[in-house]
Length: 139
Image 1 (cartoon, one colour):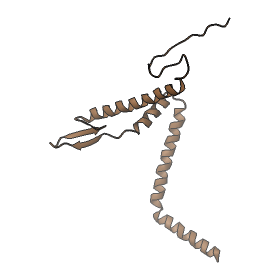
Image 2 (spheres, helix red, strand yellow):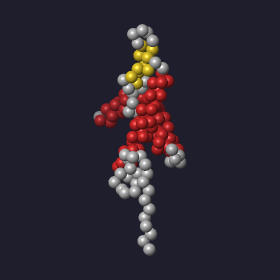
Image 3 (cartoon, one colour):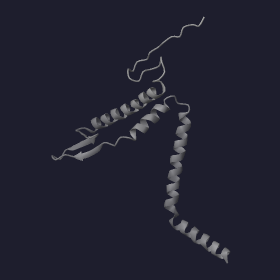
Image 4 (tube, one colour):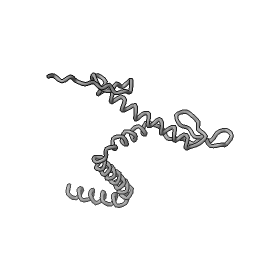
């Protein structure tokens, strides 16, 4: 008797998937395409010396909102970014890009502070200059 219920359940499940499975298959194909693109990008990044910088910029870009178009009281379009109004979209995008680059640079300053800040003779995170010291020959 359980075999009959199992076969009926599988048959009804197959019919439901046939009926409503199109959107599910489409979503799975999109997911697979994004996953393959990510894997290809990771593979190519292994051989690219600047991939880390692009990834840092991408992560910093995720932290900022997009430029928003609003209409002013006089009917002219304005563009908002970071709480400021811009008259030109290119100007607002440039301000956004400047903020993204500044955030990415701050990430590298933090790395210098964490990994190099406590060692003598290494880069100082506060001055931005490299201090070079030579060790004396022990002879």
